[in-house]
Length: 196
Image (cartoon, rainbow, N blue to C red; front, side, top):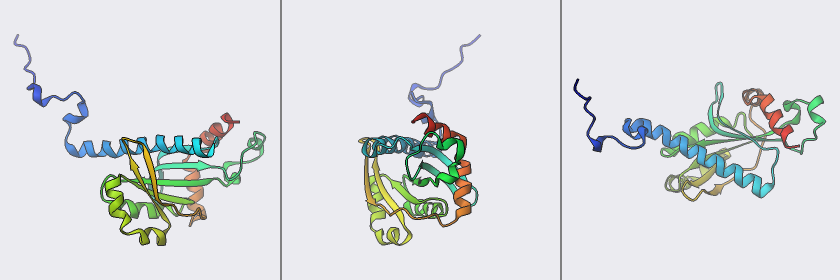
């Protein structure tokens, strides 16, 4: 029996994903960018603001308004353990912050982020520094729509806020409640309760 022929060594890469078409690699690149930002952001928030009641989740689909790449939820005031027996997450009126990540094509990301204003108190478009510099030229657009702009460098994990809008009520109470439902209320309760 003849041994099976192996592909030439130069065609086989150590990372199996690199053997796939470049379109697949780009999708993974945005996912890696999102994970790196999520880690850096949660570390910064817990270090700077000592937030124990911060609940974060990736890829939250809100029907009719898109899929937020990253979302953070925090109660407006500290939670007391006894609150869990009498109150629901809706009663706590948590603050929802949504983030849209793009490696290229900031305009598409901006359009998606605008839709998140229907269920979020604040929304941010997160871009690598080179793309953020292009978007920064249209800063008036970000101010008018209330969409924040963040530059994030993956290698140094540096978050630079180019524009931070003030928190404001979501445009749709129904969409807000729908988003909270998607966040798995029981998971939020468990996370908040563990920190007490």
